[in-house]
Length: 288
Image 1: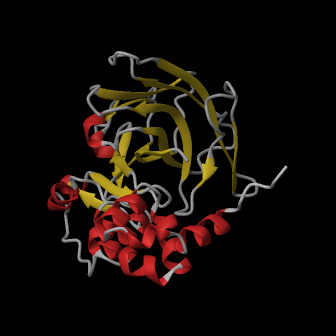
Image 2: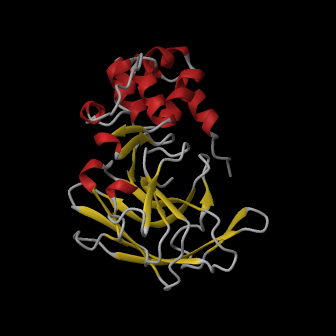
Image 3: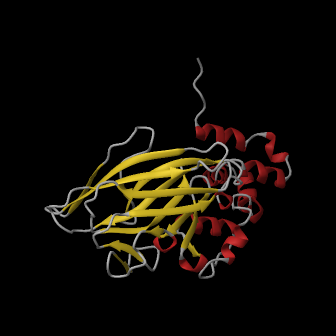
């Protein structure tokens, strides 16, 4: 049995095929059906492809069709020298939009849309009573100017929602809580969250439920976490490159973007009234 060609061999074969005789617009469209990463590999494999890949016409096809209207909502102007430069910037750093309450970026591997809802955009129980149960702080490593820190004796409840219309179509998305745990008391038990992702308002929607355990160990000043859940519902909490933590809430498939909203709910399962949780927001991004 013959071995299947490698990705590199496929690219090399494509670079010497009669495809070069096609119009550049046709080649641009074919390249856009792959991924931005594949486009860069094609440019390296062939000078003929490079002349097409390096044009704005090609990279425009990787950007969302509504990119201009999204950038119009940016807090600060997004400067770029080419469409490729714009895509690279959005893949490497989110842009604050809608008054700084929402962030937008693109997934590096697929170019699909990513969003994070700031804590100010979430319905957090008792957060409207400042300096009692919650307080708003501005840590330097946060994407947003304000994040919510739980400091009072109240049961945790967070509710957020996002409209499917603004997401990329034909895409499987994951929803994640972005947070930190700070030192409070070594006698505190784990923070147990009942987490729910609700797409039941859609025709083919459903409700998924999980339970997550979050715990800070004070003795060695290292955060350790444990989690029990059904194996089909993602991974335990993990540390992000930006120094924050994330836990997967659930996943959903966005078909055509016309199925209404996705609701996300998090509730403290036990009545320990855990203090020291810092919520930056809820992130919605493609699952690779």
